[in-house]
Length: 271
Image (cartoon, rainbow, N blue to C red; front, side, top):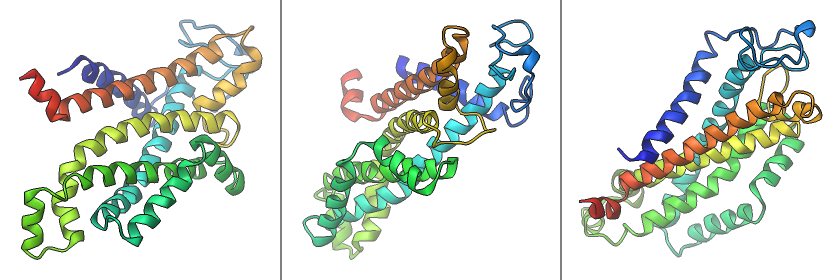
């Protein structure tokens, strides 16, 4: 096992563990305010301190992990479920009007920064976790469509695909039975990358008030609430910021490790 794969799996697993644990246990109720204990520094009772409402920061980070990971995961799911079929269809009909429509639509989406599109969609539909998932997921669609199309095009001229065509299989059946299994490794690696970007996008939307709404904790909103208190209680910004960094770095390392493991050229170099 490579070092990147091990470290990435360790960091990602830690955040996933915190998120899952938050369903059954947190040190304190994340929504309960305790004004007399506000702005406490990390101590034996509150391991990561308390915020300006006296809420336990560790509990909020745990529930915030659940929110961020859920939004990013569902957004990646939207991207895969819509983008991969579009990419496979474009590759199967290369040069046709269908290919042109799909790829020009992708170009249209890519013409705008992802966060700008997400802000636009959530501003129109309203703030909330569901709309954040939809906004981030829409941008993921052309990403997976391009990856799937590019990888599939390199396979359509292979002998086993030509044999399947001679056997009378349709383009859709060939894409599902022969193309998709052979590009799944690339899609998995791309999924980890988009997952980390989804964490950042969710934090950005929550930071400007367009993500998950109170009382649901969110790492991005925790940063937004801490910005006026940085000089007085720096831990309010350090803790959620560190959580975002660890999660994104962990997912990127995991993606690099999976790429190294799945890439046959790298495997040959190690043999």
